[in-house]
Structure formats: structure tokens, C-alpha cells
Length: 270
Ligand SMILES: [Zn+2]
Ligand SMILES: [Zn+2]
Image (cartoon, rainbow, N blue to C red; front, side, top):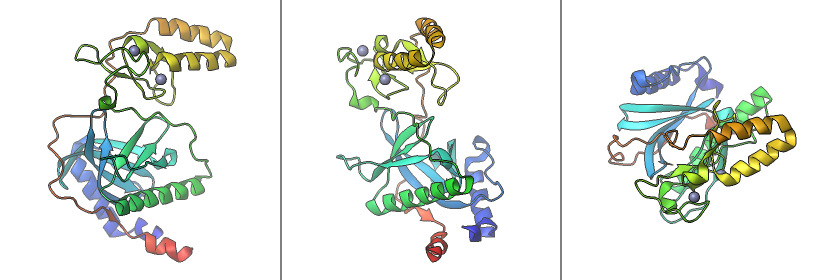
């Protein structure tokens, strides 16, 4: 990988990514950073799968919405790779060549167009994670945020199994287990420090589990937690996610992902 670190081509590529995100993105040109690969993956969002442009750097994974293919992206998300763990998904109907990207604060599924692309992406991402952990001496992250069950998979509340969702009976997501639940079944909040500094919506089942676990650790805290949870609002305004409806459909033709040759070099070393 060191070959690419100071290369002009690498700097040019990173500058290009930056300019595609424009003012909606963070500066990405950091000393030692290498753009390892890029391409379109289908990301499972709350309502349905959507194409997203992904950029794999040697230390972060960046993705965004495609405004104009290869020209303009927005809604930039940056995930430090050190926290990432991948988990392969079995093919399931239309959902093929997928895997989970899991971190402590957020977990989601992505799908590649072909098994080969899946293999390439996951191998490159895992290699970057390994290199980072080896360098820092840190251990792989163990706690990961739940993957949200897509809205469409839950016509009924997954907790009470009674409430049918409608425009008025809105869906909510438990931040602990990812289940889709109704308002009354998620009227408690619990502090999940990996995800937010504020207490988050959890389902009644997770609330009980969390409270019991907490009670074991410290009596006083759990009482405070219960008091706070009692005041939880049920507006569900916190249920926003990264979905947006103003992006035009997927790119007209599928481009293969590009990976920028650090592989020859790492193969030499083995
Ligand atoms: Zn319910
Ligand atoms: Zn739950």
C-alpha cells in the first residue's frame, strides 16, 4: 500500500472524490490516506434498497447519495474502518451478494451486483481493517449496533404482534435490537452510549433486558434510568435516517467497481 501513499494518482483521485461531494462533504486529503477502491453498492435503507456510491480508503469507508453519476454526490457518511466488522449474508430472493457493515453506532446491509464484486469489496475492506488493527494494536470491535429491520418486512408490530401499521400508526425502530415496533411498545428510552449521548427509543423487551442488566451493575443508576424513561415522549421524531426521496433512480448502466492496485504488492509479501 505504501507505493500509493505518496503517489500523484492517489492524490488526484482523492481530490476528485472531494470535489464530487463539494461543500456537502468533509476534507478527505489526509496524510497517509489512500483511496483503495470505489463503486456503487445497493444499501438497504429503511424503506427499500437504494444505490449509494462507496469509497474505500485505507482508514475510512465513505458513502453518499448519487446526485449525478460520477459527478456529484451528497449526504456523505464516513465510517472509521477500525470499528467495522463485515458479516456475509446468504442470498435471499432479490437480495443477493450482500453483507453487513457493522459498527458500534450503525449497522446496515449492502449488496453488490455480482458474487465477484462482493468478493472483491469484502476482501479489500477486510484487508484494510486488518492492516489498521495490526498497526494500532487494537482489537476488533465487539459490540455492534443492531441492523434495522426494513419497514416493508413488518406489516405488524414485532413486539405486540397486534398493531397494524398505517399512516397514523407509525413504525418505530428499537435502537437496541432493530425491530419494527409500534409507539406504545417503544415508549421507553435507554442510554446507548455507542449510538448517542441522549437516551434512545428501545422496545419494551429490550428495555426490560437492559434495565435488568443495569440493575445488576448498579442499583442507583437503574432507578435514575427508570425515572428518565418514564418521561419519554412518544412523538417518534427521532426516527429519521439517511433516506431521502429526491435522488433520481439508479445509474443507467452498471459500472464495475474500481480497485487501485495495492493488491500486487501485498501478494508479493505473502
Ligand atoms: Zn406493539
Ligand atoms: Zn428491541
